[in-house]
Image (cartoon, rainbow, N blue to C red; front, side, top):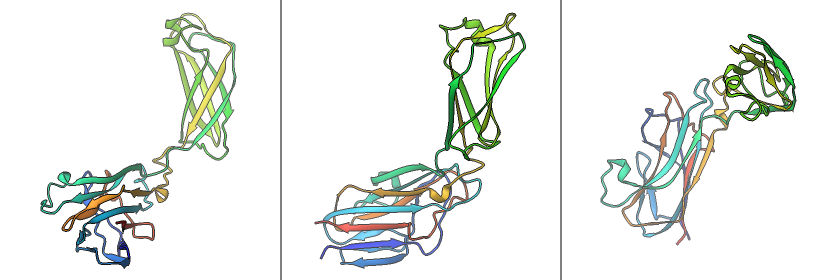
Length: 255
């Protein structure tokens, strides 16, 4: 019978930022076979030469103001006779980086706007409704561009003196302004298409509860006396790898 096991954590785990920290697996969820065993501290020790595959799963805890963190989970192979440190000497057999929260969610609008003339010191504006609905709220970010704002359509000096500004002013509503800052004459905006993007701001609305990672190694030849362990890295103090059914290390012997 092939050996197979999965290991979990009894308690939530964190470590210092900007450092690879060994995940201290301490709970045998299931195990069959005797080709390897879990050591105190979280490393797997192998007794039998063979071909193995590893999977590590990380479920990061949802915590306010930590949702922008970049997290890494991975696997290292420590060959027999190698010292515990430096850790970077141990082979990397699977790593993955992910933002702590989902990428900003986007809402868009585009449509015809122009032609129009913007007098010196003057401003032209328009409000548009972006979609999908329910995405953008005041405090989120917005960007805008116009297809007629280019070197072929207007002089370079006019381009430098024209300021394009976009901001979320209400739910799903973006205000776009074109301001003639210092030109002595009106700036002419030709006929074209206005394109608007609104983005959720991660620091005010993160989703790190969904920051779940799964790393699957290739098949790895392991010798007797070798050890394999999982490491985590983060950049914000207080980032937590939570104990759950989605945080585990699994190993399978293939041959």
